[in-house]
Image (cartoon, rainbow, N blue to C red; front, top):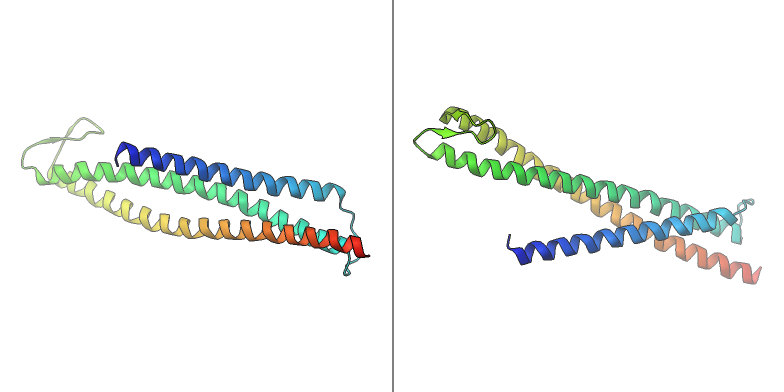
Length: 169
């Protein structure tokens, strides 16, 4: 990865994280605001019922916002470990293809071709499983994003409807 590409990726990640924190903060603030002034009443087509729906939507948005942040940590951790394993696999692939004695970079001892092939298989399996794991994490990550945003939007709608109902009742 070139330096410009790496810097662009870092900027995108920072912007994404700031956005996630902003949305989580907004959801939390709206939940706290509405929760402190909410007084339960029997369910009916009233302001209280719509505020309860908004409060529920904001709670879901906060919950899935936290899940999204945790998922982001898992994705980055898995991606980092995969990159490390891929780097080691590249070194082991070179060792396997060379006819002379080689040194294991981890232990500093001489490594045979059979040991290198064993390391190669383990690393290949890890990289493959990491890739599959990242795909699963990515699916959940997108789901959390969607649920968080739609529930926040629905909470806004319910809150606005509650305010309008208060005007007419």
